[in-house]
Image 1: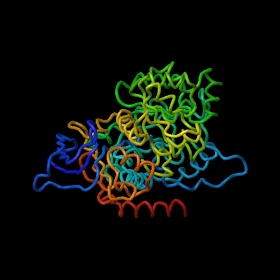
Image 2 (image 1 turned 135 degrees about the vertical axis):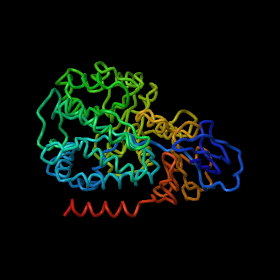
Image 3 (image 1 turned 135 degrees about the horizontal axis):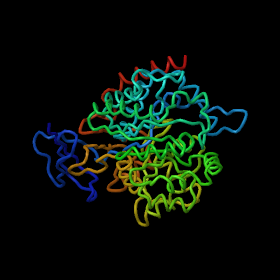
Image 4 (image 1 turned 180 degrees about the vertical axis):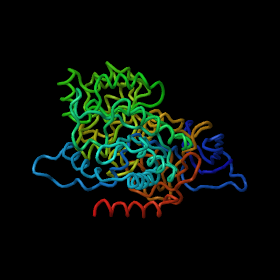
Length: 453
């Protein structure tokens, strides 16, 4: 099936262009023609076309608990106290509820301008820790949620075996995550079957962290995975760094770089606490740093050393992680503002003379495509037809042109700027609303009422 769209303005790799005719066949863009009047009968979309961006790190089920961990306890609250709330919440979720929550999270992502998601999925087992008859029962629910919403999916089943660095015993709240290597490969094969039924979906592996996977298991996982993305949490918290040093004598990012042959297939999530040497070495590896600024701020993780990493040639992508708030522009804004607050300077992440918002957007779209193994992130022939139409009638974008459009979307707007979204060639958002929003929202609210009763 061939679809033609005409937009008044679009961001192409050659720069900003006017009167752009985009031809789509199936899931891909086959032609892009700037300076072309709209042919008769072609759909004319008002607004500004930009490439869709991949959300590289999501725990979709956590969207159901957003806002429920914001009460101060008797001791200083931290990631570790938040985690105990999360463990209690997830203990009761059924596969059907996981699917309902994920579908709503994916609707919100699409309405925010994310066109693909990397689901870092570790909720595999029954509440008492047993395997489902289908080892990938809950992964199948993630696939179903992606299919229902139209978002592109890279499923990242998580390997989780321990409760601390060096093979420490797991904690009771982790029983839904746990596996051994043989069980994990059965999970991967079952996940592969489900993913194969979703057009355009990808499969990767996700050793959860050096807290959850020991050295021998890490080596076995990487040796057996010849192609496809590899994602891992690394150096999110100072306590994690200290624990890793006590176990191995090395910091988490340092240990991975020295022992695991980290390359362009890898996405290290967070990397909040790195030394200058680690920043340079990670940048030189070709791997992507998967940053989740809203979640990192919400959990009090710390601030990523972005200027040093980018000056060394590093690549980053953006994820919504805990999904406490789902907003592409706010993730990028929070990333930049964290650097400004720490350094007490402005425009920390844009090259000299360049627009900061445009640079952040370009880094996120290219880094996201790399991290999820996608042929996307640009409006050009051969790329996935992931297209976001921004509403240039929105007050934040009024009278803006060229890079000022992206600067104003990221730094001056709230919600409501994304007007239309095409993911894999299919329109999934029209006039700011997902086409299946109402039904998916009803199911989500019914699920919350059961979970919070």
